[in-house]
Image 1: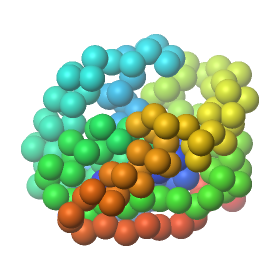
Image 2 (image 1 turned 90 degrees about the vertical axis):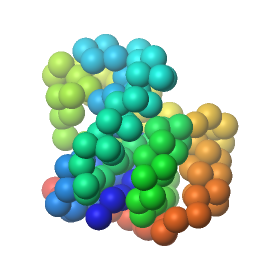
Image 3 (image 1 turned 30 degrees about the vertical axis):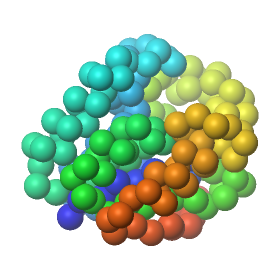
Length: 158
C-alpha cells in the first residue's frame, strides 16, 4: 500500500497517516530546515528526500500540505487522499494539537505560534500558494491514479 495525503494544516493528515501500517513520512520534517522555525530547506534537497523515502520502502504513507512534494510522491502511483474536513474542524484540531517535538523545542514555544497558525489555516481557501486549497484541488484533478476526497479526522483525545 502506498498513500499520499494532502490537506490543510489541522485537517488530520498525521492522524489519518498513523492509522496505516507502513512507514510514514511527515513532509514537515523535510520541507523545513531541522531545528529552525519557518526556514524552508532547499527545494531540490526536499524533493530528493521524498524520492529516497518512496524508493526505499515497498509500502509507505507520505503526508503534508506541500503540493510540490506530494507531486513527487505521486510519481510512485500511490492512492491520493485529499483530506478536507472543513475550516472549523481544522481550527479545532489546531487548538487541540499535542506538542510536536519535531517542530518546536517545547509546548510553550508551539503555543506562542498558535495565533499565527490559526490565521494561516483560515486563509487556506483564499491563498494561492502550494499549501492552498487551490493547489491541492489542482493536484487532485491532475492526478490520474487512484484518489478520493475524505472528510473529518479528529485527534484521538477529542
